[in-house]
Length: 469
Image (tube, rainbow, N blue to C red; front, top):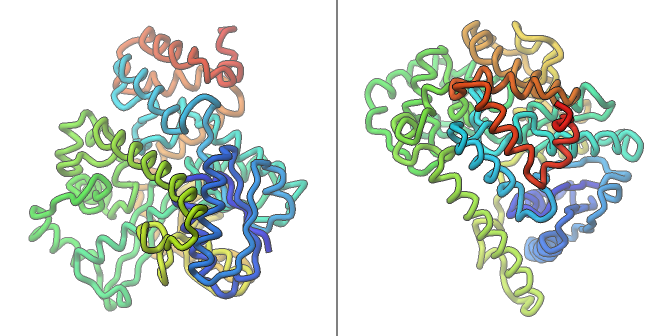
């Protein structure tokens, strides 16, 4: 069996998956292919991955390549975690940072890609996520010829848009992955619940999921949550920029929509929570969440520092193979502890019938009543050797969530995909026409002019025929 990881040169994700595989005895014989276009990062990950396997007493066969075709050919599972960026830039975050700065200069706080019900930072680019969708479609179309039975495990954002368009335009099998559903664990922890006695479901679309079922020891768990909100929520303090699951924003969304938002959904509300940094701090705690002008740059710098450390560590172990990765960097190289990501349990369930329940992005087909059958939804799925079996939702999401939250989010996804497919610039303009930050048509023209004329956006300019308008 061959598992390929596209965009393997990230700071830690590929290494976490390697650790998960190495600790799954049923997968000892599989081959791992690490693929990245950045040779320096690829070489570092390759070196560290092999050393990590040695420390875990695993004999995994690991290969590396900068060639996408080599990674795809004859693969059984292809994990796409790539965040593409133009040559000459440091990373995809720099691309987004430059465009965000231009947007803010023209009056669009946090950039034009921060859109209502789609506020999560760095997950789109010029609204339609052109580079990310292009790469995913390239992978999927190559799979049709070179790995027709493989699964494309879409991990890089935007998972919603990419999973949807790959499903519509190719024959490749695709499933979307996100760890946002783990936000339920913070609720159970705060309520001091025994996880073994909790029965729960979440449902929605990626970055828009809700706790539709919550029972504890056979009783309605929402009554326990209501009690905590009434008696203890005012004591809540954010422990970091990512800690927003039980923030005032989450509770406010719950009061309005009638079900608790989970994970990144809390960050994806309306402008009510996002007008400026002061507003964000009121709703998300003292850090203002992660999607602001203070915490997001800090996070990007942390990732860059970790990447530098990763490269330095790979060079160090070449000189001194006695270095123990699990001792010098235990946050990344874990012993007897898996990452919590769903990818390897998914593979193990399909290949070795290690049946498991995961929260995955799959075609609706009536799972969530009230939204179209062909929309990709994020729901509980039982995975085993016979395939994917979405659970019946009980209860279904309520009408307010379906109509007021999911409806606009699905519409924005459709607009973004149509913009990508047709190259119709008017769709991008229409996004901004509907944006409350827009004060005039000239403002729209000015911001798009400056963004489109960035040297590294030549391909996007050509796609939207910008100079012909």
